[in-house]
Length: 303
Length: 299
Image 1: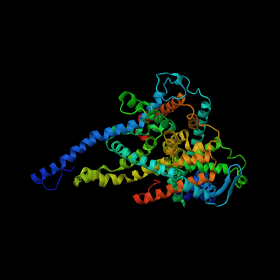
Image 2: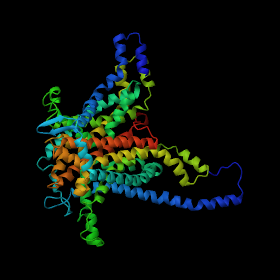
Image 3: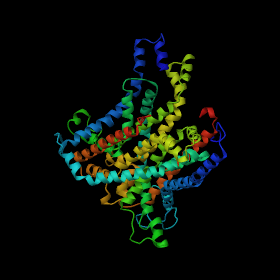
Image 4: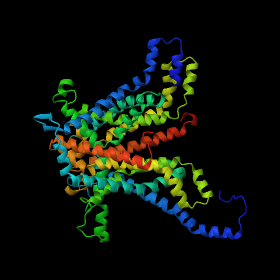
């Protein structure tokens, strides 16, 4: 590194430079070896503390309505994980909307990602901008504008255009529409990133060997982009199942899990919130761990 | 393009087929584009029309091109706009100060723990945003693990001391909730840096600080840009933290929009507030992009 110099420096110059360097170097080493790792550890601890609290308090033997103060260990919550009025329905709705919106958004977003990554066409820049906009708009603005659209679809002049009852009243349909809308952009960005390193010669080779476009797509293109599509779908699913702000605007009287939590915490804080949260967390972590292990076992060329 | 060229050069493809291939990209993107136009662009336009309308939810709204909603929005809610800017801005700065050293350490000193560390950074995303905020309420509660300990075991804090219901709790919640959004883009930008550039700077007798200031940090600027936008925008529009961790004095503009839409049914004023928030963010983001000189937002 720095030791290779064209002409040998005089001993005096060397001594001077090493003296100049000594102080910052030891400070730098302290920074590198101790300060930065310690800071990182504390910051990551800060990120994880609320999760630890959530899991810990799922075992709380609390009294009264609010699970705020530690009273002792109990399995009560875990033995009755969905034992609260409205909770099973809310969880069911959350899962249903997450599944359906993930499938629709992944399909629509993957198609846009494909067209953006491999074609030059008029309006490409504008489309890129349009994809970026929903990600740069605060959720509250998207939620309120959707609510405005849905509600005004019941009023003139929109009620003349939109068949009665298609959008308004608010409910599972309007939640689904909103979730697909905010998920499309994330799918496009994820799939596009995967397509960026795509070797087009593979497709040409397939065509040279007599495959038509359809066969080339399913036998070559799709398997290669599949990990990107799966990653996009997982992202969409987790965004959908966790969404509160937009859903709260368009849900009407329907419940999803976050909406149910929001409604109930004004009057009570049941331990079931912690239990369901912990289950979701453990399933997600388990899923990631499993994928990592499976991918780690595959030979390199298949990754 | 190769597929298209190939397909076009095939003698078997007739005129109809050629036209289909030329329309390829538009056919692929049409369904998703339609969804975004109908459920993102149109609602935004509809919201603008609502903001210049008058009337009530029960009697219907009439497009009267009045600006009274904007007058109300701009004159009555200065405090809440101010709170949003101040809390959101403070949280973004704190996130940058916490996030940069973390991203730097993970990117340059992570070694074989890099993936594990990244996983720990995104672990909060596996828990609901609401539940994490409720956890902070538990943690910061007057008799919770932190204050309870300081009050009754250590005794250095007076029993009346409280954090929940103060601006500090709101900023802490915002800082916490959006920290991963700051760390991840910073990490991506830092990880991409060619380490030989830093070595070259060292070879040319730059001090560590000089090398950081003139090589590492400028190359990380796209990450700083993306991270601060991804943190500031959601923090600006948030009302969950202000509701759960704050008090009526710490209400942000999101609280007002939410309340006007869902409780008071005052659609025109709420739409005007929403529209001002969105327009303000768009202007701020484009100015910021020009200031930092990074135009590669969409990748």
